Amino acid sequence: MPRSGPVTTFGIGQDADGTFPFVVSEGEVVPGPLLEIGNTTSRVDFGFDPGEWTDAWAATGIGHHWALCTGHRAKDLRAVAELLGVPFRAVTGPGPL
Image: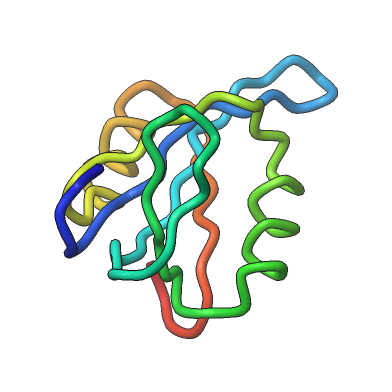
């Protein structure tokens, strides 16, 4: 489990036309109870309602597997997407990402 602090979720989605966008969201690992499902888990606060975040994250076309990176990395991942000509999608709450 990452220590408390900033994190970024990162994954690759798939659109109906076959395009593979980069998908990111920035949050904070916070203390609190964790799911005991046999995998490494973290409690992440994305700055808005968890149900709304889940709906917005799923609506990007993201698959089941994605990464949790330490630190806020959205700007770096956006730059990589631009260099590669890949669409970039950010799931955010209040304020820009």
